[in-house]
Image (cartoon, rainbow over all chains, first blue to last red):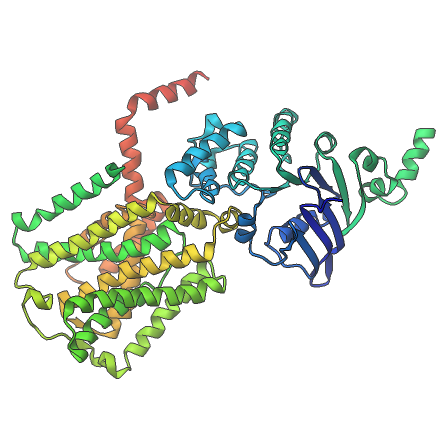
Length: 250
Length: 331
């Protein structure tokens, strides 16, 4: 079996008395889209912040490309090829869309002109051509989400961590965004996505891990996951699955 | 590529003609002080304006430049010119040290501001008791009006040297603006977490900016000593210069090449007018400073440079603006 690009092993994170992550493990296979779902407060974003180097872990191991990367600083991880988007988009407000993307492009391109040119190409890829010279502060939520994606792509990542890039978008914006993500995967980028929009998870993800109260309670292909009673209960409460089946029969 | 240097060169060349037009010591003296504040403010502007790290303690660098230049001459008999350069290097070193200590411990925002203020105050107290700086008496540089000693009979050479320093600092800002380092610095000022996620080593970027910033401000201190031939702890490390350093760029326009120069000109002109109007009532010019600062921050957060660029856009592109607004009206 091929070693996965990212392996999270038994990661725990404690905030004072709260155990936000309890020996959570998952793996992201090369070139695939892996989704991380779970109810609010399950620890998804905490787990992302740990993988991205923004939080330290209390216990466990994170192995990327055969190397343990836990507690490395975010910029080092970026140089290793790990890109992330933020759940709440964090554009550089005072810069234009092009300048925003160029910051990422600078990682592999020291020259300003090269970085700005590359930024143009990436903006085109995510459909931000028309807005390229607008200040980032003027973008709508959908625009900011695209910008997050564009900036992350600009560092030419091997692993892309998407933290709810579809949240806050309307159905037509989601329909526009899904093919963009699929194209990125098509170029061989491994994607791990946190997502609440199940329609997108179902159509994009090849493997889903379900996080609840800091633990991974289920994993498998998306069709199997939505039918799993454990998962339904995690979202709707104990006994919900049985009741649903009950009403289904009644 | 070279085009972006043109406005700076034109302004510096125009200012360079002033001593040819007037030999009034009052005018030249006023302009030398304006340029000095512009230089010190440009140092602050790199770190605070571009990098978003607001320092309240740029006196630490100004004072180090001033003292090193003075003490090397007076106590060690070193010529003023190399003394000047060593002063700049010493200022840069102090900047790197304070930067390393505060950025490595992750100090941001008001914490960073307070720590820089504290460092400047500590240096002020040390300078006011240490024998090498002349303690409370200060250090007086011997009058020696020869260019070899970095002293001149007339104000004009001082003025040109000061103008040259300001010109170099402005060109340096232009170079930084067009570089990866400059782009990274702005991104750090905008949002550190986002910058880190894109591979920016924010600690190194801030440290680099602080070192260059300190060197520029220290150059102002070195010049101050040669011009006034006296320095004591209050002048070198006092809060006055930290305030001047941030006031000029904030009023002129933070994160712009011309901001510190514009701001210094306006602030100093206002200060002189205030003194005239109030008949030298002590401290009243400071009240006016304060009022102007409040007005600028409230009404024009991008400073004079921001107002000018808005005006310029309105004047240069009235047709497109009109088209845009009429388009909006129809929509």
